[in-house]
Image (cartoon, rainbow, N blue to C red; front, side, top):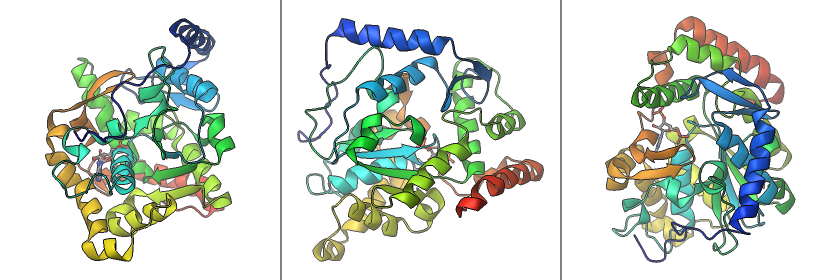
Length: 341
Ligand code: A3P
């Protein structure tokens, strides 16, 4: 790993450990009294926060601590997504675009050779505000690149107050569902649990009971924020990124205030970022094949964030009837807001 890699493995804590533990304890006690329901998650159980569902209680508590303690800066860039919507890809694109001057995308010493995108752009509630920790992020260089799966309404309050930038990636609900279902069942198999059937998974998803769900509320929240404030909230679709990744890398670079110069364009810098972050290249990297990322739920193999990386894989799994049901909900929820996915 390059010595100038900008996200240290261990971050110092803010405040003293006892006070932080108390804060986590208070939120845990509060959240423990809220309802849970069977749903699309590893444990087949989800925890209800008034603004959305969480797949574990510590995750919800982490989001609450981040809300209370994270101090956003105007220069921050936050990747926001529903799980399984292309987060890993966007983290890779954002990190390699922002840091292309220190780490040439085609160069042999690129951080992706040693660590996955989730180590380069860390999640607030899955990686930073976890295990009674309140990390001291003040020392990280600008722009700090962070991520979250929480709905817009649950973003740390300092994010709105700071005016920092948000990059949202939306994916077709049927592919998001199939990707989530596959991910959940992979972990259920590791836990020695029966798989959740695709019909049951679709039922939970349509009822909104999936991690960060309801899907439609999550997407609409960020879509409306994008419409109201396009220079602060960028809205990408996974399917459009797949069709023309280079155009999206250019838009991303402009959005974060680091457009590609004519000279970079001529040197093929955009294509180098696209190639570096492509599904084919990322899956071949040693950091993907044998690396792990520490999340609130434990260490997760980096390879689990890559499955097929296709548009329309839902056709191989969902019945026409389920697909029609999801399309009908999507149409009913999104049409009035001019959103199609
Ligand atoms: P599939 O399960 O459909 O293959 P997330 O990163 O939000 O967890 O989303 C994971 C999904 O994005 C998975 O979809 C995964 O294969 C896909 N993905 C991961 N990296 C990708 C990349 N570089 N390009 C395209 N898709 C990618």
